[in-house]
Amino acid sequence: MTEKTTSDKGVAKGAAKGVAKGIAKGTSRKTRSTIVRAEELPLYTYKDYTPQPCVVYTRNEDEANDFIQLLKGPLGFDMEWRFSFRGKGIIQRPTALIQFSDEKMILLVQISAMPRFPQKVKEVIESPDVIKIGANIGGDGNKLYRDFGILPKSLLELGALAKTADSAFTGRRVHALAKTVALYEKKTLGKGPVRSSNWEAVLSEKQKEYAASDAHCALMVYKRLMKIAEEQNCVVDPREVATDIQGSVSSLSDKPSNISSASTPRQKNQVVGSSSGITPPAAPPALLDRAENVSTASSSSVATSATAVSNGTALPRDDLSESSVAKQPGISAQCLRAYNLWHYQQVPLPQICTQLRSPENPLKDSTVINYIVRALQFDPSLQYSISRLKELVEMDPWAMRRSKFWLAAQERRAGLQNSGP
Image (cartoon, rainbow, N blue to C red; front, side, top):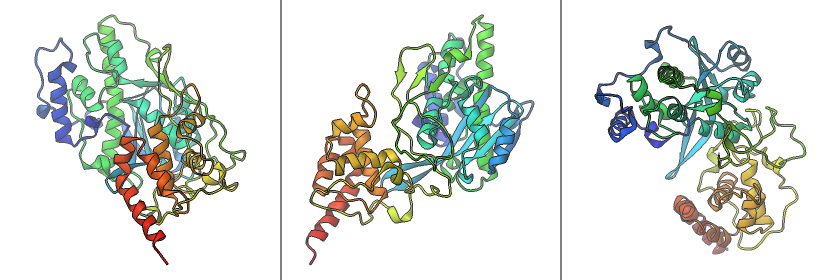
């Protein structure tokens, strides 16, 4: 489950209709003499291919480190994570499952069940010599960076490869996986309720097949595209098309003793050999042992929790350091850093955007507002001025729309506190 386009996350019937619509609009190869109806496409499964790969599913850190070394690149790649719902909003939990596929084996690594991120798995993800293939794989790379501080390298976007390898391809560089599979493998991906199931629990057989097929199909499309390039006498070096996740972030703590996976976070998702790049992700939280950070949204910190509200301005707190913040389950250091600058240091929003990244490439206002709101939602002990909070959220229409019910609840709560005995 990558951070893909919405069409790639619909139910199977909706995805099939989207494929048909995409083909009709011209995303298919012009050399095709007929258009295949999406409803007629068979369901994709790795079991239909020869050799049929074995599926290895592990919740054990040592096993993951052993099995990952048996794979030979290039690798089909995908990720799954659980969604939790708060009011009318949807919250992405940390990555729970990572899938790797070569022709002989599909490895399903359930990160959420492990105390630490497996070192050998991290090395493969960060290796420039092992190509990882997927749809909107840059989004997956950015999520790994945000969740764990990992810096993936050699991420090959299937749409970008298609534009390079297939002269008749007219789709986008970031092309929905379902459409890509329909176009080149003449099959449809099953995107039913399983896609939004609990990826942090022990996987069912349906979940295993779904996850395995998603990673395997990326590899099969890659092989098909390389064959097309050969037929068209087109020389394609996948490494020249691949991307790296890069970035830099100022130290959030002088004592990073609780970080389980050593990495030096960098920013920017940049195409190799290209001067243009994608806006880098925000700085990641410290990677904690799962024993400390197993709950992203605990039941005690729901959106309507009794957050401490004040109408005045509090003095800066010396005890609210990023290192102490990172130890609180469910709150990234970046969220609390934004809150600290806004509430205790009274820094204006434009300056917060600059301080959290750089003067040359500041964060968007909406991103910082979201950080502050998330911090307040997750930690009921944080103080704030309801008038300043409302003024902040109203600066961004999207933030206001997303948070209006929660903000209204906080206003009511502040009113009750002020009218009390």
